Amino acid sequence: MHYVDEDIFKLYWSINKLIFCYFQEKCSFDDPEYRRESVMKHAQRLFRDARSKLKRKYFNDTRLKTKEERLKNKPSEMTKIEWKFLVDHWSDEKFKEKSKKASESRAHQKMPHYNGTKSFARLRQEIVWKCSRVDVLVASRTRKSKKVVNVLALEKNTLVVDEIKKLKEQRDQGLNDKTDEQIFQDVLGKDTHGYLRAYGPGKSITQHFKVKPSRLDLSQELIEVKKKADQLIEEARKDAENARMEAEKAKKEAEAIRNDVDKKIEQNNAIWEKKFHQLMNFIKGGTYSNDDVSGNESSS
Image (cartoon, rainbow, N blue to C red):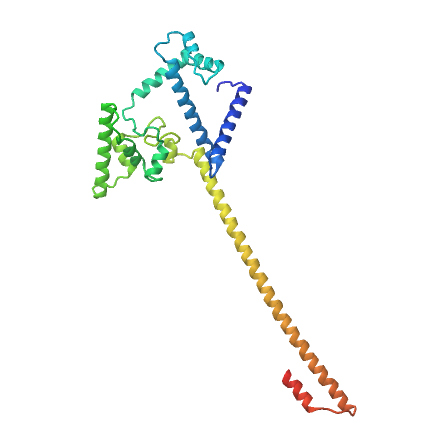
């Protein structure tokens, strides 16, 4: 691991945080922390693309022969310090060697896509969000414009797309039972060097085929588990609330019944107390009215 100056690391981390905060202000995310890695990778690609355009326009100009001439050919939107840093970086022999190897690697690419500036993620969403790599490959390697392209690359793309369509038609007719992944590997061979073809940046072979769980997969699983746990907690809370309401309702009904019983007992006690007083008056020589008793009994 290369040594990194602490101040430079802190500056780099601060810039990353500022960039992500800016994205959060401009965009809405379902789970910002889960999307952080994808957002920052996209920001890094945009930065590299912008720097590459500067290099082609202001550094690789064939009229410029020396480093001093390139330093003078500064873009108007950059400061002298910023431009000097880039010129020194691009003039370094290690960078030149690395750039040369990358150019040679790109030259080996036999099947360039025709997406233009459209991302693979957007292409997948336009087809069907859970489409296979075969669908993406056919869509991205099918030429849609009349723009002049490499003839050999166009022929290679056409042959591959035709072969894939042929195998899919045979599957629809019941002549084979191959999955999309098997068709992909039959036509193009297995993926190598950890790169997942016809998918775009951001996913590796191990993530796609689930050879081992990646940090991204574990993060996604954690989010799903958390959502499920929150859902179960909410359901338990609702059940508890319903049980509490049922208990309150039963308590109120029992209270009403008890009050009604107490009222009737109180009424009967008053009637029998009146009858007792009338009986005592009769025993002591007073008068006793049968009509009063019968009237009271009928009222009870």
